[in-house]
Length: 182
Image 1 (cartoon, one colour):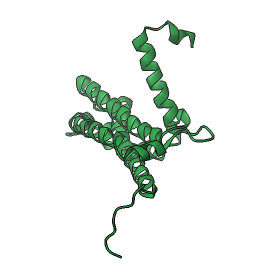
Image 2 (cartoon, helix red, strand yellow):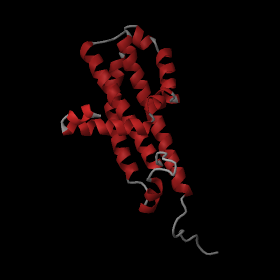
Image 3 (cartoon, helix red, strand yellow):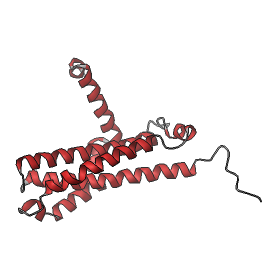
Image 4 (cartoon, one colour):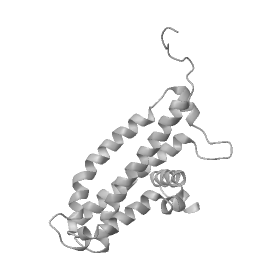
């Protein structure tokens, strides 16, 4: 902790932000136990021809062509999700649970931040792969794995949105809409 205090303010702030994200996501246990991570591992290994053999389509071209659009779409969607629902609904989602559990609001934020972090790492991997024309080997596998994991992290974010929609659906309205004549 003292090392953190010796860093310039902007580095301390960045470290705190990443610490918050990592805690909300579940840390190393949350990462290693993720079914999305394991599915990405399986698919990336099963797709070995794209990163073991020099093919016409390189793994990094998939990353640098698909991820910028996905990243922009995700940021736009994340912004919309943050403003979802009325004040009463957002109040119901915020704040830690009685036993210190993470709030549903922060779980949703954690899923989207993780999705964005994985996309950014996958895009950086693709850029490095493009720069050095890394067509095969462990680095090529890692870059391709990150691309697949970015796609699965999107699925995880979609499921988090579904959970919030379910909570919204179950949240009783203050004034139910007029259902028409009896």
